[in-house]
Image (cartoon, rainbow, N blue to C red; front, side, top):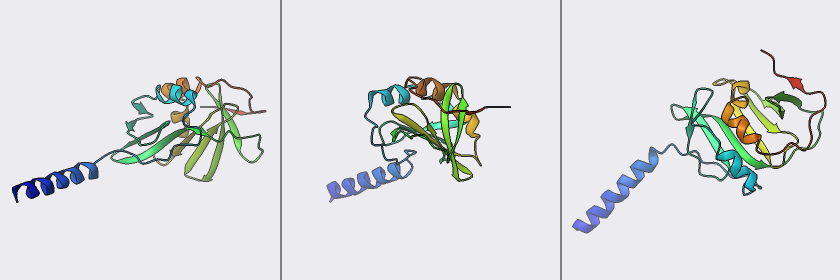
Length: 159
């Protein structure tokens, strides 16, 4: 009886601890195992644009947020985008990004001209996409992937 009570108490404690977990459940990208993605994720900072880093359960990912809410998700190893006229291309800190605003106020930015590609999803009601993409930790990680091509006539960041 005492053993059974200990098992039930232990199971209840584990459920309580995992219920409070700050781990963000994500799915790794198809090319998450590319060694270049390890170079990106190892350089991710402890905070981005005032958002604290959160643990993720998927390879080559990063997440940031406050108060248990995630406002920034980074995924390395997503499909490399080809040329397109459907999305705006911006250059920030020497990195070209294709900007998808179709889910505004949430924005999805994907590196252009780099393989593997890095995608950053930002809730712009919480944090500025420009602040996230120009964060030194994000920039230094993405720069570990050589640029093989560039956008034609990209928009430059302006203040």
